[in-house]
Length: 416
Ligand SMILES: [Zn+2]
Image (cartoon, rainbow, N blue to C red):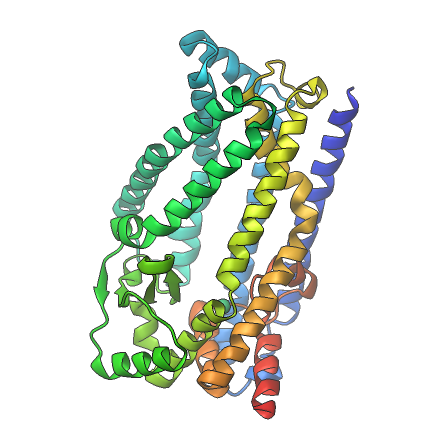
């Protein structure tokens, strides 16, 4: 057996085993703490809500276990099982060896993966979310979303893929630099188009009507020296009763978006604190930092792919006989997560650091007290667990665990 096959199998086994182990720990920890509301939340959250959050998180985590097993199986079938080779031969017979073999091969792998994951997504929405009264989607809306996503994916993805494969073939040994420039331009274009062109295909955005709240928010924006292209309400309640607020877009297309579900639940003081937290992400340059990190990692990844592409062991080790730009790109995209998984805690840590900084900004510019009120309401409404397994949280959570976050805000309030 080729050495690289052994390395790949070992890495895949280690990653899958770690993911399953973390899921089991998470389930056990939540079950163990199911019957007591943590002391910091005992006044605001009742035992029944706490248990609902525990059951909801456990139901989702159990589905995650199936997802992990499915992803691992598919990856093995595609690579060592000969799936990619089979499809590459099939498409080559139909469209020849040119750029279109690459497009059809990569697209068919994506479509097959999505078809296998569809039942899980249906189960999450129509069984789990429905059981806990979060789902507002009809099967018709679900299918319409799916169709729209597929069409947008094809409209944007096929030209991108054609361009990337063409650059890989035509630009000589430094092709990865050109592909990087193209990939970055594509990302920036999506960021610009998303709020005004893509998001409205899925949701209705209407200007915020509440005059008192508008005035309040504009005062905050002015105080923080922030310019935006308006305040919008999104009809999130069409799909889910989970609430959220976010900023989207870059530069001139920057918008502030509130889910209608959030507006219905939070009072003006709490809304102001939540918005101040979001402003904190902008003011502390988190968005720019994240984009810069993505740019740097993409460059490193493409350079690595440039090095791997001419190595026969890379293909043979993964069960593929056809050496080409398309098979190299596809294999690289499929197996990268197996090798980068162990760095996941670092990216989560980076993200949680930003959340703490944004909370500090909210405490300084609005109110830490009100932010805590808002967070507790959101934890409660979204049935987010207050007692995640610490190691699971360390690995995956982009936001600090509820207890840590509230404790951090309370500590800040004493300083300010
Ligand atoms: Zn945040």
